[in-house]
Length: 275
Image (spheres, rainbow, N blue to C red):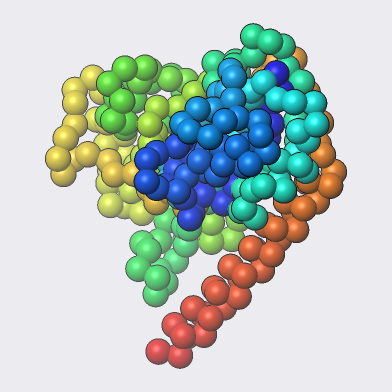
């Protein structure tokens, strides 16, 4: 058994988990393993395969984790030779035979980059009050039944840690838990942001966390997926070894994507500022 750390830009994909007739990250991983002869053509995956999480369409990852029965020669660098540039394997670890990438994860951390200007601008975003944001986050953190913030019917009681920092016009928000309900992080962001910009009162947090169901216009929609990153998945007694060549390759890929994104943003600035 070997576990692999996978980084990817989730924006072009219809989520992580394989689905028929659409492009997914897991589908790309499986196609690479078929070309490498690690699993057979058809619908199957390698023996004892599992993944740490199922990120939504548009959500990216720095440390998604997959594990399966892998041949000794399948290094991250070899794996990357059959993957698209926006999916990069960068570390690996030998793990016990009974290891399961989903069930053995002790903690998962997601990071959300929320555009949150403190003053009105031309983007259409309402200005955010950091104190109102802090009050909402404090009320949402801890152990609650989040049934009104997910489409899941079971397993909705969770203990979620939330910490955040302001970075210019962004709030960088980190969510940590043993596991997350479907869309929970994005709905937590959405609710806290609504309180912070004044479009919802702080009392709405108590209403959402109450046992009574919320539906219709009082519900909380998920925040956009693109600013969300699966940052870390921790496993007790598992130590990952960085493949320096693979990690440098991944760093170069995402540095190039950062440069392209900055150039695109400058073009948008040029157009907006001239109108």
